[in-house]
Structures are given as structure tokens and as C-alpha cells.
Length: 184
Image (cartoon, rainbow, N blue to C red; front, top):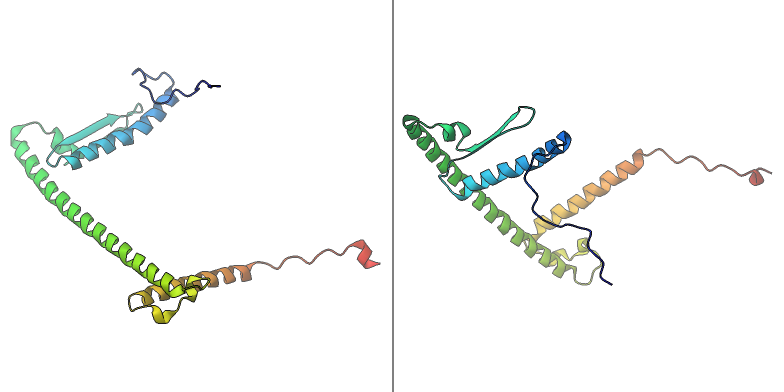
């Protein structure tokens, strides 16, 4: 038996004023970050593009985003346009430098992940039939694996120490209440 769907799924909604003020505020607060994210992506995807978005809430609050800045984008006269272009060029240089830094950091993270995978593989090989990883044969571990293994063991020791301290700070449980039958 085919059951009719109750969900309307994704569909277009009619663009009109939302009558309920609280629903309108919720919609505004949900859509504003998405709009600003789209503006940010535009400025990143098209270097040199001048993007600005200015939004007023119903309460009169101003929300804005701009690249290189809202002021630079909104300046319309030609003599200040050269200054805005120079500011945009400086911003592009800074943006390129940040992109380079991000790519270098991503490469370092990827390299470290590969190194940690290799260490983990070596520890698994050194475990060879033992039940727990910390029982691994340290003679099989190399110079690269031993410091990581030592750090992991220290983390276990510190966690155990914190757990023991936490248990030691607990008040002792109350003594059991004797039943009337045991008293006679």
C-alpha cells in the first residue's frame, strides 16, 4: 500500500512580507549570516572584486560586510577610487599571504597525520597478539615512534591519576542500615 507523503520537501515559497513579527525576526536572523557568507565567498572566489552588503534590521540595527571594506566599496568619486584601488591591492597581497600560510599549515597537518598513521601502524605491529596497545614491545619501536608512545603512556597515567584523585575526594558511602531482624 502506498502511503501519501505528508512532507512538502524543498519547494519555492512565495516572496511576501511575513506578517508575524517574531517569525519575521527569526527568518531575518537565520538568513543574514547566509547572505554575509555568500558575500565573503564572492570576495574570496573573485580576487579584486569589490563586494559590500548592508542590511538593516526592523529594529533599525545596521549589519554590514565588505571587501576590502564597506567604505571603500561605497566611495563613488574617481579621485578616491585610486585610494580604494590601492587599499584593495594591499588587501589582495595580505589575502594571498594568508592563503599561502593556510596552504602551508594544511600541508603540515597532512604530513603530521601521515606520520601519526605510520606510528600507529608500527605500534600495532609491535603489539603482536597482546591484548592492549600499551603492552606493545618497545624494542620493535623506532626512534620516531618511542616519543609518541611515551606521550600516550603519560596521557594514560595522567588520566588515571585524575580519576583516582576524583574517587578519593568523594565522601564515603553511608553505612548500611541494619534491619530489625539483625538487631534481635
